[in-house]
Amino acid sequence: MSVTSLADQQAHLIELNRLEYGESYSDLNFLPQGAGQRRTAERDALVASLAGISVLGCGGTKLDMRKLSPGCRICVDGDWSCLFINGRCNACCFYCPSRQDETGLPTTNAVAFRSPADYVAYLEQFGFRGMSLSGGEPLLTPNRSIAFLAAAKQHFGERLHSWLYTNGTLVDRDILLRLRDAGLDEIRFDIGATSYSLARASMAVGIVPTVTVEIPAVPEDLPVLEQKMAEMADVGINHLNLHQLRLTPYNLKRFAGRPYTYLHGEKVTVLESELAALQLLHHGRAAGIDLPINYCSFVYKHRYQKAAARRRSAAFIGKPFECVTTAGYLRCLSLVGGAPELSRQVERFRDAGCDPGLWNHNPSRGRLSFAGSLANLVDFSSFKLLVAYADTAIREHLSYRNPFREARLPSGRKIVVERWEVDELEFRDGALESFVQHLRHGNEPLPPQDRGGSRAIAYERIVEGLQDYF
Image (cartoon, rainbow, N blue to C red; front, side):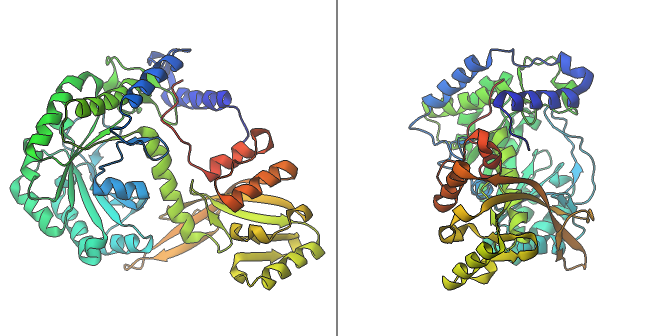
């Protein structure tokens, strides 16, 4: 990752979007150059109007944080596994981001599970506190869905919160009772698939403990959504989750003709969808509707859910002297210096009674790696500091290119966590002093951009704030 200005980063994202959409790119109505500031001010005014009646959290990417559903709170904590129980759906929602026409195997994190026992072992191995069943449409394979749900709840009991996503078309009282008896804690309905009918969602009230409506904020449907919010509260829906519409090559043709303004970013999103979600929050509070609303922005999903996945695998494969950063990367600190100086530093660690697992001395390379918690014992004036960052991922199969650690499942299958170095930074002089303060105090500013600080920030912290409009 190179040090670049904000303008360079934005130009890079624009070019990636251009490549993804090819010839169709020129037909898309992207935010006009120079309009970003005006539309950002429009959004900021909506957010400001919610001050005092809603809480902006997760680095300013999610609101209202006061009354999230139990599943959403586990997601915020980074302890959620989403199992795509199948890849087939019986609805035809224009906003669906991917093809849904193959049943396939239950899959999460690109790892397929043939048996509930293997999936339960995976949940235990990586410390999940929540699981969801998604698809496709999970109720197209009801026996499979219930088998995985029941196995997990029988193993974990109340230690695991479970929820299921459905378009509701296959919901009846019988399947709701079966899901409840298997241990389902929460059910989430995409009522956009049924012209916003609440008939099936209201049927779940009183059977499944938590009933949530989870839909994208479709701008042209804002009037009907405002009306439905009051109806949701009246029939006993517990939560409303709103998402931002996202354009993909798959749904591109279905979006054609809709009066949307597209935003550049890691993925292409719809500006009016974010504004509609904020307007629904404002309407709910202004109308006194007793319905907790959660706007789950695209940048929340992209930043926080990806960071949580990295943290989980990094913790599994990391060494005792390495640190998992907030952004989910493994950080390795290494002092580089002469043999006498490095030996004296090792003795200083020993004299202080430090756990020997918290450092690693490699005399042949002239390096001493150490945990950040030992920074107060280091005289940095005698050394050069190298900071290496590694990314990690859970994989079904080895790539044979990277260091890895195996996890064995009850069936005898193995899954692996691999790690690979993504960057190594060198800190000297003022930049070194600034980074050391960051290590010692955690909330200190990182070095300035021209000294590698912007590169370190990308690995240390999750970017804050809602999406940049450009």
